[in-house]
Image 1 (cartoon, rainbow, N blue to C red):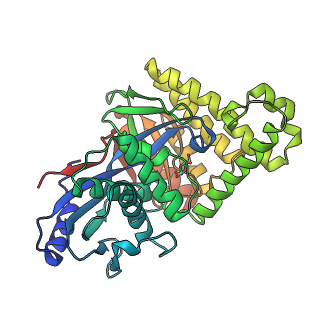
Image 2 (cartoon, protein in one colour):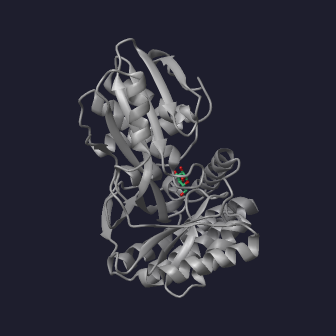
Image 3 (spheres, protein in one colour):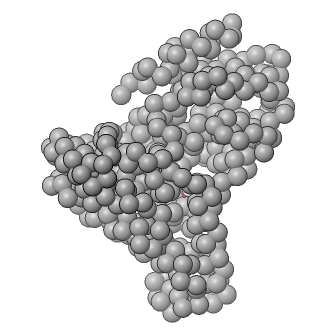
Length: 391
Ligand code: GLA
């Protein structure tokens, strides 16, 4: 899909209506994580792709120190605030993510003299595709570009991540912002959240496409439930740390150590830790398979990950489970799982291109039969990261 598509033009039009400055335009993608669920804050591997859909921004400087912020997704909810007044807790809702990205980057790089900013997105919100991180990333890119800076991806990842943890107050790991900034066409990123090493493993588009299936159920209470999972993992870790020397994160706990000490954990914490420890092994298996071009094994790891997210980490929903089972029942589907944190939203599958039509028909039919809901399948190839759009 071209980035010069529909959402940008209304943004530019609106910006030109409020500013006489020459606008600049930016885009940041969303992401789907294929393997490595809830691994980032446990020191494991994640394997995401950036999507060709995301957030568009039209931006222009102003000279009165004010931020004027609009989003086509929230018509009429205009934010007018001195840039110097941005601070965590100032507001709740969609603008927090934008403000967070502006705040962390201006704290790091210096203040803008004022900013008119209009956003739109073709990425559905609250569906597990990182619409919020996409907004944070575009905000960081806007500040860097308007200040005339060209920071490296790591610095921008760090600032966009801090927007979420420090401004919005979600204790997320580094997955989403990393997946977005390090997105590369036709590649799956293998990112080690402990060692911070990265590798782009090619995904042959003739062998596999990424299908995103929307359950039609928005995530509910996702940030509080997410923070609860993070807290549970932290509690499990501290119990292991009392038993095993040198453990710094759950990834350091081996399957043998888990078996030896699991009975010290309350049952819910034991299930959370069991997921993480098995997912560490699955991500090893999956990344090795991917490097050899063995998409079948990688896909099988995805499906097994979903079962573990359902039974042990307990972040799935009945609709996500139906969707994943409908997907993997189709010949030519390598594997499927919920994407993002869970609690609703979208499932992702890897599918052979020759099975595309059959997949769409079968999944929509089975999903409707089981849930009474309509789903839409969207197709992607892994895409590139954030960028300025030439006007
Ligand atoms: C959310 C968080 C990420 C990651 C995933 C689960 O998307 O923002 O940091 O923890 O959930 O893998």
